[in-house]
Image (cartoon, rainbow, N blue to C red; front, side):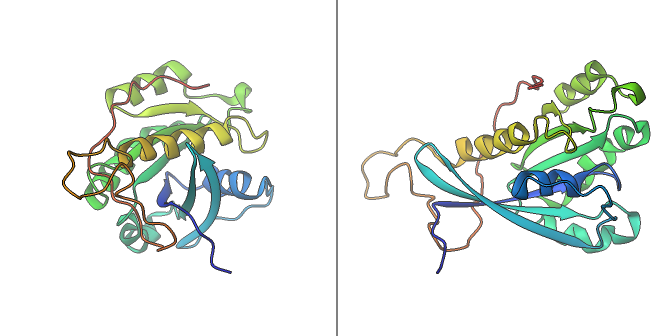
Length: 212
């Protein structure tokens, strides 16, 4: 049977290889963790359908390869994305410093209004931390990004991270009804059951607050 939904949001996971993108996706969509996870080759995706504000929202989440040799392949998959999780590893300073590069690539290939949440993953490795929460939060605020720290291993803030980005996308899709001109109401962007990706028209205002 064809699954019905009110909105379909394409969300991409970006960041260096081995920061835990695949396990964040696995934890969110299946509540599982793979200790022997291998580097993603090309692009993979999974879906999860949730209820929010009385609507059925299907999140189509794409896990992009972090290695340089796959960059040409994955860049095409930014198209149509309305949300992105920019992931780094709190114990790997290089993965944090490369966030600038990932942001540039995202803005080059994605819609300017794409909603972005920055996630410092592997917060269970506190004894190996190389990026402070304060430094990462400052970076996120500077780039007008939402921010959270997660652990796919312990399932810490994983649900909250995806819920936050989905809600930010949704708030930009649902707009007040225009004057009565026969143009429909607040659900005029509804793409129920069509499989189309909803385009965001305006960027959200982000305060960059940590949701840890």
